[in-house]
Image 1 (cartoon, one colour):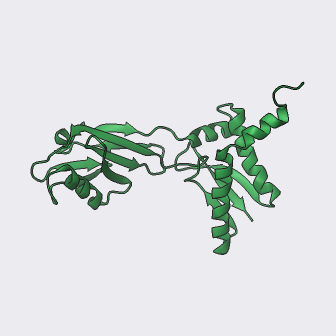
Image 2 (cartoon, one colour):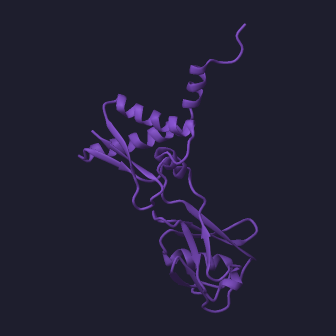
Image 3 (cartoon, rainbow, N blue to C red):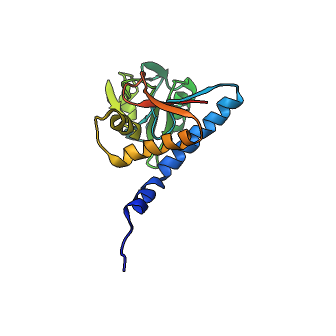
Length: 207
């Protein structure tokens, strides 16, 4: 009587990971789009598990149902936003922040009616949001000149394994599965360091 599974079956289980399927699907969708547009190369440096280069930071104010008085200011990612143009309550504050159109910044509220700032970091070496010394900070529950750093996405680990800084067989194998899939279809695929982040890579697919 045989109990368990053999080594090959174990590998197949590992390779059925949705991460691999989703990565291949995202790359192939872009290849189809690019080839339809007459391109001979596809470059993907973001928006997949293995290449993510714009993680998000979420900052929640500690004041519930904040109210502002007058035209207070909020400084996010170096941009000064004037509040109070549509009203003084939380919904108006949210509207003023979103209407300001600061790149990567989205304001919302949680179930406790705290102001929530979600920031999509640009592809750079520093993934963080700085809240400057705006006059609205105390009213909203934020701290002057505070920096909030994004949690590293999984793409950083994939980069480190690719570079040999970290050893992880599952992560290595997942990348090899992606490479094998496209190689078997006749494509040339490689990884290159993302110079914007210096800690993630981008896929280069030629056809």
